[in-house]
Length: 485
Ligand code: BES
Ligand code: MN
Ligand code: ZN
Image 1 (cartoon, helix red, strand yellow):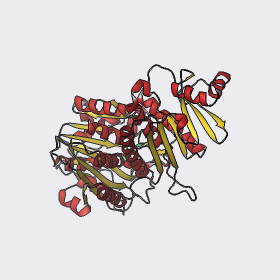
Image 2 (cartoon, helix red, strand yellow):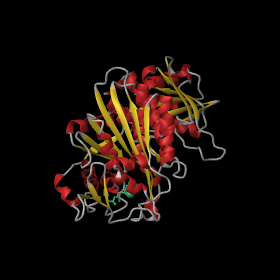
Image 3 (cartoon, protein in one colour):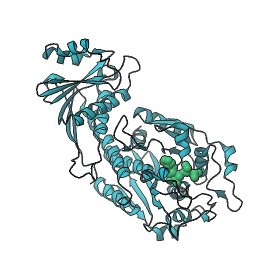
Image 4 (cartoon, helix red, strand yellow):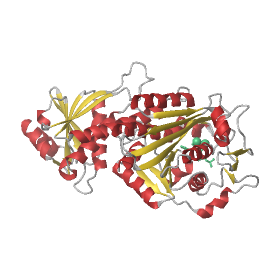
C-alpha cells in the first residue's frame, strides 16, 4: 500500500479536445470568452457553448464553473480569470476544480484543455494541470465502508507527455504524504510509521536504518527519549538514504518532525487544540513523500532523510515539567512545557543528521501555533541561517504553489530561552513563539540550516483549493523541486 489506492490515470493526447473519447470535456473561459480550444469544440456543437456564454451570467472568474449537458456527455466551462497575472498555480487550481466536478458527477473519462498552454508553454501548463487534476482527485476513503477510492482517466488535449509523467511522480508522492497524515493515530504509531518507511525503501531501492529505544539510549538521545517515555508505543528513529548512481555533487539532509500524536503531555492541550494532532507528523510525511519522488526522479544529490517518530502522551512514566534532559550533543535542556515536545525530538534528530556532515540540513515541522497566528493556514514560516539557501527553497515552493515566507532568526531573542538550571530551556514566552522555537533548533545543528514551520499548511480542516479536508502533503513538492534544481 505504498501509493494511494486511487486509480487516477492522466495522459497527454495529441488530439484536440473534441476528438477525445470522454464523458466530460473541460474548456477554459479567459476574460469571459472561450479559448481557441473552446471555440473549436463550440463549432462541433453548433455554437451552443458561445450561445450559453452570451445568455448566462457566467463571467469565468477563477474557480467558477458552468456545466452543460450534451446528451450522454458534459461540457464543463472552467473560469480561468483574466489575461493578467497568468501563472502555473492558476492552472494547478483549475485542474483541481475539474477533478472536483468529475468526482461530483461521477464521470470516469475526462478530456481537458491544456489550460494557458499558449501563455506558459505546453510543458509547464501540462505539468501544473496534471498536479491539479491528481491532487484534486485525492480522497482518503480507507475507513469509509462501501466507498471506493476515486477512479478517473484524464486526457490532456495537446499536452506534453514528459511533463505529465514528472508531475505524476510529484502528485503521487504528495498523496503518499497525505495518506500518512490522514491515518488515525491508533493505526499510525511510531512503529507503523517506520514500517511504512521500510516498505517505501524496499519498493524504491532506498537504504533504510531504524533505531529503537535501546540504540537511542546508547547514542545519548535523552531529549527524544524523554518525550517518548509517556507512551506505551516506543519511539523509532528512521533514516532513509538515496544515493545517486553517479558521483553526487552534494549531500543533503532532510529532517521531519514525527509526532504521531501530540496530547501536549502533562502540559495538556485543551480538547479543541488536541483535535487533528495526528497531523503532528506532517513534517515526517513530507520528508518521506519527498524520498519517494527522489527515488523515482533520481537527482545527482545524495539525500538523507531522518524522522524521529514518537508520541507525546501521559502516563506514570511520562516526562514532566522541571525535568532536565540531555540531548545527543551533550547540551542540557530544562523542560518548562511538555507541549514544546517537537523541538526536543528534533534536537536529537538534528544532531544525528549532522553526523553525516551534510552540505545543508532542511527540516520541516508542525512546530508552533505561533507560526499559524503569524502567517495563517496557507503559508509556512521559513527560517534560514543562509539567505541563499532559504531563497532557493522559497522559490522552489513558489513554483509548486507552496507558499513559504522568510522569518527572522533574531539572535537577541535567544536570551528568552535562558534556564536557571540547564544550558537552555525548551520554551521562552508567547511573543514571537515561532522564532524562539527556531532559535532553539539552531543550538543542535551545523550550518547551513533551514527550518520550515508547517504547522498551518500541513493540515486543512476544510476542503481547500487542491484537495479535501485533512493532510495536504505540504512540503513534498517544494523539497523535490529544490533537490532537482
Ligand atoms: N504540535 C504543536 C504545534 C501545532 C499547533 C501544530 C497547531 C499544528 C497546529 C506543538 O508541539 C506545540 O504544542 N507547540 C506549542 C509550543 C508552546 C508550548 C511553546 C504551541 O504552539 O502552543
Ligand atoms: Mn506540542
Ligand atoms: Zn507537537
